[in-house]
Image (cartoon, rainbow, N blue to C red; front, top):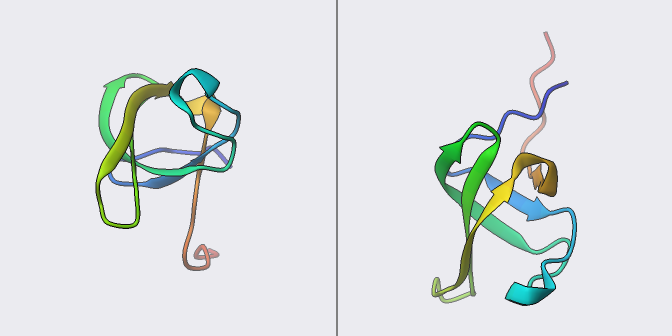
Length: 72
């Protein structure tokens, strides 16, 4: 199944981004589509304050799901 990333999806990093202080598994929100398979992802703390915002390729992201996928 193809991983289709959409605006406001909650995603996790699949690899570290040490120059931005981000680790694999860190959770962010897609806030913009910049190009095919390139997204602006915002990372926020528990109080909603953004601590990082950067462009990431789709192959560095895993879309998180909070409910079961519908089966046809």
